[in-house]
Image (cartoon, rainbow, N blue to C red; front, side, top):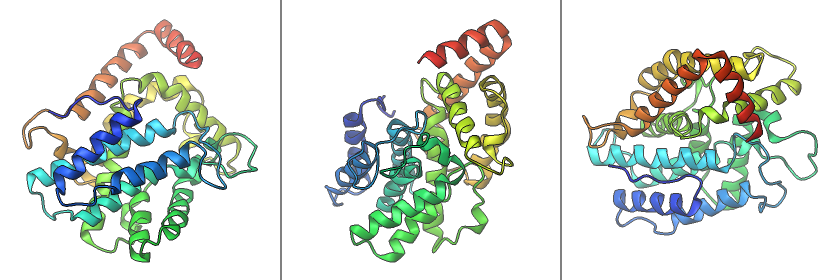
Amino acid sequence: MHPVISTKDPAAVAHELQAAYLEMFPKGDKVFIPRIFQWAADAFQGRRPGYQAIDARYHDFEHTLQGALCMARILQGRSLAGATPAIPQRMAELGMLAIFLHDTGYLKQRGDVEGTGAKYTVVHVGRSADFAAELLAEHHFEAQEATAVQNMICCTGVDAVLKVIPFQSDVEKITGLCLGTADLLGQMAADDYIEKLPILYSEFAEAARFTEQRNNVVGLFSSAQELVRKTPDFWEHYVKPKLDRDFGGQHRFLNDPYPDGPNVYVDKVEANIRKLRRVIASETDTTQFYKRSQMA
């Protein structure tokens, strides 16, 4: 079974990512994961020249760590299962780099003082791809590799249209599907996911104030309470079908042991949804829940 790792402890996550990588690639580059982990930490903590520290409260560094941990475990599960097509070392490295950079579009540049990075919700995927291109050029990645990372980043976002992403190979596409899966499950399986839903709404609300067109996710909810009420349907009618159909069932490689063992990520999401349904069932509980979340 996967060990329980707190994503509030970056050092513990870094250790687990390194362990998973070296299990998959015993002769791999032993400094690759620590290096890209530091790149991401520097970016989110305000140590990258030209950028401020992240100030979006939901899409923070922990959110990235949740996705990265889930991504590593999906890749590890595929490797242990002997899945085809096999994801070679370099593509797995690019996949891990992509998950670390997939929400850098929420970072504000120096001098950007209006609002928080949440205002970029609608355009954050494109901004993340641009950030990746900038960073990888600095570190002399080949153009084809930078494009692969950008394509994988484009697999995230609730409105991602996979068929229009110009993947360069089947294995690049599969790695991108693993990333999209990890982005969804990593956050929804978090112990405090439902408590953070009002914070997610506050990001949508801020983005709506900075977005002229409202025919996107930021215009779907009139209040935090409405987002909370609609989340169970989001899981049942959007996420689950997307995991199975669009992402090709990559989440099944989290079954431990594969193929019939328990899937701790899906189980945790289901537990969160059951808890949320109980909250929704009581209007009083919903009100108190919202107030507690606002104070967090």
